[in-house]
Amino acid sequence: MEDQFNYFNYFTEIEEQYLRRRDGGLLLTTLDWALIETWKDAGIPLEAALRGIDAAFDRYAQRPSKTKKVNSLAYCSQEVLAAAEDMKEAAVGAAADQPAARKSTAGQGFEPDTIAAFLRRNADLLDAAKLPRATGISVHAVAAESAATLRKLAQETETAKPVSRLEDLERHLTVLEEKLFAALLAATPDEEIVTVRAQADHELAPYRRKMAAAQIDQLQKQYIHKRLLEKYALPRLSLFYL
Image 1 (tube, rainbow, N blue to C red):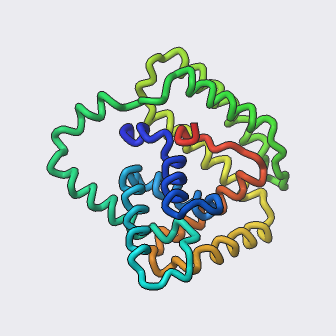
Image 2: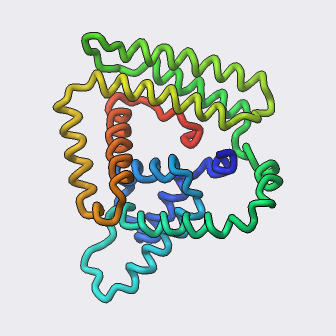
């Protein structure tokens, strides 16, 4: 996990690589961002994602007919997973050298003051958000509790220089975000969730044959997650969004 933190620009680099190979055009869709999220959660290295995007577009360039332009990052999914598997196999023989490299690079780009400011900014956004209300469910209470925890974590981060347990902090942030998402999901009317899920299914339709069922399920969840956070102007808490 710690070596993944070297990729603090994980999302930005993937976006830039995809748009560059696509020759510009539209920005990434909600589905695209959700897919990047599933790669991040699955531990796909940034290098594997970039290699996979290149491989997918290289294959596309060899097609005799190019009447349809690549319009989703999902087109690259199979190649990304293949690149990750290739890197995993190549790393087996070099496993003995990994601890020293990990120790020397872990935490780059994550200074205590920067992390603390990120946590406090997200706490302020949680406090200011206009959240849904539902009987028996208090999203406001979950958001307020999460904001208080973020401020506590910010203070602990500043007093524990240098930051040496990024993985533990990221786990804590993941738990907070999952609790917030669960509350949002419970407080949002079923009709809205069904509509968002239908949108996800529509965007996923051309790529279903290229993805495993587990990946599709995870992608649908991430899609709904992202749409709900966007709807209520809530921040992503993960350090990957720092």
